[in-house]
Structure formats: structure tokens, C-alpha cells
Length: 280
Length: 325
Image 1 (cartoon, rainbow over the protein chains, first blue to last red):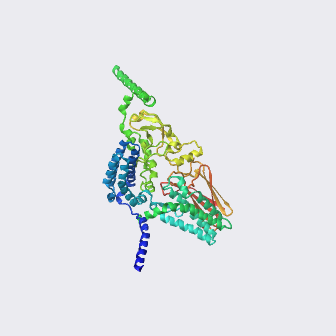
Image 2 (cartoon, rainbow over the protein chains, first blue to last red; image 1 turned 45 degrees about the horizontal axis):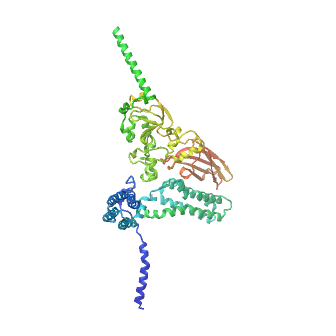
Image 3 (spheres, each protein chain N blue to C red; image 1 turned 135 degrees about the vertical axis):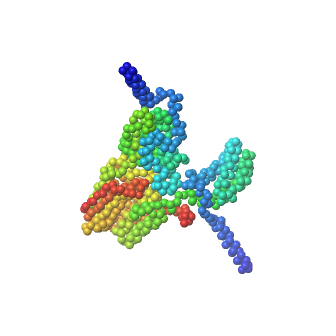
């Protein structure tokens, strides 16, 4: 086997290896500005997602009624689907190319034959137009319009009593947390106890911060709840005792991290990163 | 002489007829309006009122209530700077039902699409199920008004103030939300010239929806020293719900403590944030205890309790105390 052949085979394997990675690559691009007018605050209602629901309902309505042999309603949903699809195609000019009017009309015509197999076959062409847009845009739309932005939240720092940006606040929590752990590690228990007061105060302020979006107590408590209270009580007990027990101290630090910080970061950080990129 | 006597009699006669006519009308309007034929009442109906008008329309008759409502937080629930900021330019869905309620009737309302700048206005609370409702059955010719006993019950306010309503319920105190926040005075419901005289005086609630300022007497403070700890306790002894209270707003009490050594120098301090969103608000009639470890030789503590309502960044002092060791 010549060196060139070996090189070609190796290159082919590398190429094959890379391909799936490329297939899973995705670009999360900020949605076009024209979409903003279909979401609050520019719109009173989230009109874009409502439009998606309308099309989805009519699409589903065709098949539900075909199965039930309620052909009158099949025709109603088919006409409505075409009407809403056309309307949607005109809402965001930048996304005009995602829509295929011929495909929706062909599907509606197939549905009106009342032959479920024909309708199923024709739905493929239409489904592809929806699928392409969803694959390329759905994450962006949800990140931009459905997830509230952390970067708009301002927090009153309980120590300085000044309003600060959310990211700055998280940095100050992190710094005060280190004030506790570093001092404890050095055996400076008095300093660690003072730092704990500051850290606890800042950490508990997050309950107010969470309530800016979360209306129910249960959700708030998922982030700052009983476990946080237990951890702080345990930490305070150790730091106020004559001889703090490191094992108990670090166990409580771990509990706080796992049940508080981690819960919130797992749920919110990915989206927050995406939004931050767009807001910068 | 004879002629002037006749004129006098005529005046007296007309006067008597006028007075008795007015008395009869007064009696009919206030006590027996069901005797008036519907066809007659139809002539006085104002159909515009039953089309969810803005508050200004209601003010044409209910001037006093309108003016007091104008002074209330309810009237600016959609337009206040604090709300606009906190709701991220009114984009947070959770805020909408109670800041622009379509119709308040004992459960969380739906947000409305029209007249949003009116906030929580006349129609939100009084136009229910396409009927004008209130605490009295009234003739009110432009719009018949039907009595609904919920207007003097706390569950009505609990439609939006759900958390506070639950807190109040748990206290078993009889005074309702309206007793404290809408104190009643005898007055007329309408100020429209002429019509006002036809309506008898009734108990009218204060539509400013008074927000009680927290006073020194409301919060009992006790403090003392235990070895190397300073102990302080606070008790809400007069207000039958948590203090402060809010479903989504963020009112706060701040407890500041400064510690001084023998030289009079401030060597340490502590702070508590007493707030509903942090679940640290003061429950009714229950002592809350705070404990601080002292790292220096402390001989004096200065304590100050301050209140900051949800819609303001300003704090006002509720009470201060100096505690010597």
C-alpha cells in the first residue's frame, strides 16, 4: 500500500469522524428585529407564538377530524391553515424564505380529498418548511423572547444598599463567599464569622431577586429554601463555637453549593450566556 | 289684603306640593325603587356606562370617590415608575393580572387589553358579570347597581392580595381589609347637582386604599446582653398580617445595629432585612429574635428600625433605641 493511499484512507477516516460533529454544530443567531413587534413590550401579547399555536392547531385539527371522519371540520381547518400560514409568512420579512405557499396549498388540497394517507404524504413537504425554521430559529426565539433577561435585573445590595447589575451582584456574592471559606481555611474563625454575615445577607437577598420573576414560593424555595437555611444555621453554629469542626463546616458549604448555587446555575446559566452575547 | 293672602296661600300650597313631591321621590329612590316602572327607568339609563368606560366618566357623578381613587396606588398600578421598572417595561406576565385586572371577583383576575393606563379602576372592581355591583342595592338611574356582600369582605381584596389575605386569615382577627384600608364615613355616593340631594347618605369606603404607615406602637422591641452576644427581638403587635406584606412587591423594614466600645468608637455593626420576599417579615403577635456575636468589648448598642415601602427608595424611621450594657 502506497503512502499516498494510506494518507487518503486516514484523511477519509478523519473526515468521517468530523462529519457528525459538523452535523451537531448549531448557530444560535439573534432573531431579526422585526420579530420584536410580535412580543412584549412592543406588543401587548406574544403574537408570534400565538400564531404558531394557531397553525399547529389547524394542522393537528385536520388529522383529528380525518380520523373521526368529521370532514366538514377537516375542510374548515385546511382553509384556516392556509390562511394563517400565508399570514405568518408575511409577518417577518427576513424569514419569508422559510415558507412555501405551494406546499401548504398542496397539503390543504390533499386534506380536502378526505384521504388520510394522501394528507399524510403531502404533510411531509409542509412539515419540512416548519422543521427547517424551528431547527434554525427556535432556540434563539425562546432565548430572546421567552426567557426573561437576567441582565435587565438590578439588585439592591443589602450591604451597600445600592442598586447594582445582576452580574456584578453575583461577583460580590462570590467574593463574600470566599471571605468565609478562605478565612476558615486559614483558621481565622472570627473573620470567617464576620464574612458569613455578609455572605448570608447577600445570598438571602436572592430570594427577593428570584421573586422578580418567580411568583410562587415553591420555585423560590427550590433555589433558596430549607437547605440554605440549614446550611447557614450549621455554618453559623460552627463559627460561633469555641472550636469549629472543619468537617461539619465544609459539609454545610457543600450543601449550600449543591442545593442553591447549582440549582440556579443549571437552569439559568446557559440561557443567560446566550442573552449576554446579544446584549453586549 | 285678600289678594295678597291668596298669593301667600298659593306659595304655601306650591311649596307643600314641592316638598311632599321631593319627599316622595326621595322615598322612592332610596327605599322603594322597585316600584318605579322599568320603562321609566329606561329613559334615564346611560348605555355608555355599561360599556366599561374610563374612570373619568364615572367621576361625572362619583366625584369624591374618583378624587380619592386618583390619590391611590390603585390608580397608578400601570403607570407608576416603580412598576414599569420592576416589570421590565410591563413585559412580565405575572404582573399583568393584578395591575390591569379585567374583573375582580374573588380569584386571580385576567389582564385586560383596553384602558390599561387606568390601572385598577372603577370598572375592574364594580362592573362584574356585565352588571354594576357594590355594597348596596341602588336605583342609580344611569346604571342599576346590585348589592354584593363581598365588597365588605376580605376575600374580595384577596383576589390579588392573596398572600396577605392568607396571612390575615391565619390571625383569626375579625377586622377585615376594608375596615383598616377603606375606613368608612357617612357621605353621598354622588355629587351631581340635584341628584346628590335625592340620595341618602350611606357609609362610603375610602378609595385611597390607605396604606398604614408603620408606627413605633406597631412594633415592640426588646433587647439585652448575654455573655458575648447581643439579643434583640421584634414583635408586630397591632397589624393582623405580616409586616411588611406584599404578594410580589418588595417593601422592607431595615434593622440597623451599631456597636460601640468604651472609647465611644463604633467597632461593629449588624443589619437585618425584614421583608416578605425574603420570608423574614414579622408575623402577627409573634416575637422574632435576632442574636449577634460580639467580637470586641462592647458597652453600647444603637438600634434603628426603618421602613421602606415597595414603591419608594426612601426609608423612614419607625423607632430608635440605645441599649447600654
